[in-house]
Length: 372
Ligand code: ADP
Image 1 (cartoon, protein in one colour):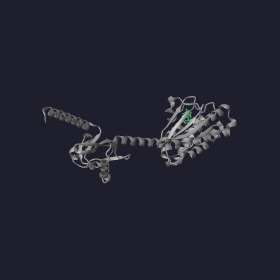
Image 2: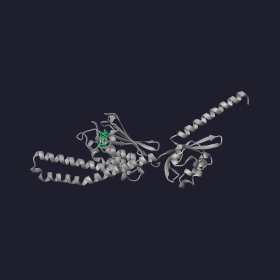
Image 3: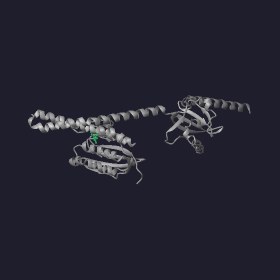
Image 4: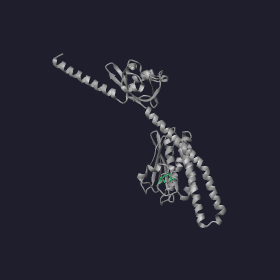
């Protein structure tokens, strides 16, 4: 090698060793677990987070099969999966939507997310797996699920138990009016009317609260459901309000979706009911339409009513939130909260678009059913 060549070679070597040092530092200090294996699945590199996560010292892992970190019941299929990755190496998540578990030294299992990266090295193709510890997230999810369940349980029991004494109050005040109405002065008659109204309102709220608390716990099965049929049931439920306001309710072709039929009816009933209730001065016109959106159908319920101020777009879906006085528009403020829960349970989304004074469009998505 000429002196110039040797100099160049030295510079390249220096650069390479600097790169390797940097790689080692980044690899070692990553908050994500990193483990590199060769094409046979032998561990050739691990970082600190892997030691912490799996409870092994690195000397115990280096040179051993990666299967050591795989739960016992999945070990049999793991070599085959590894071979499949080596045959088609590309950056991808492991497990394709499945919940993955890793096996710790003490035999316990830890929920993880794993990303696989093929790496071409001087010694051939290797696989770099990045492992994220999901146990804190899983714990938080579980805690949230449990506290939601408790809250639902509480609302369900409380509203159920409130029904009976409420019915007693309502029926005795009613009796008072019927039996002694002609002996009472006008002020007493008015007080009784107010009490009857209050009891009835509370009964409606308790019923709605009970329905709200049962969306998750008493929901039916998700099956292919004709949304056109659900629409028809909603129109029947709203017969009196539609006749009274002379509302026109139109719809385009409505698809089959994967849904709980009775909750879908409830969804249409609440949204079309609101579209008729929050009408402006014009005769109500409601249009229901559906358009395909990937794996989902996107439904729209459009009205020509009073509209909603954009600052209230989110608030109206919160339980008991109303934008109007009871005297202006009756209601309990639970209808849209129920809609939200129903759509969420189906894995869809719901939101509103509106210009105050020019009507509103409620939009929701539901997973598509089998192709027709
Ligand atoms: P409720 O109808 O019992 O008041 P909801 O939860 O169904 O309760 O609706 C919450 C609030 O959202 C309503 O009080 C109303 O202010 C507003 N809202 C709902 N639907 C419409 C609509 N189609 N047009 C205008 N405002 C609406």
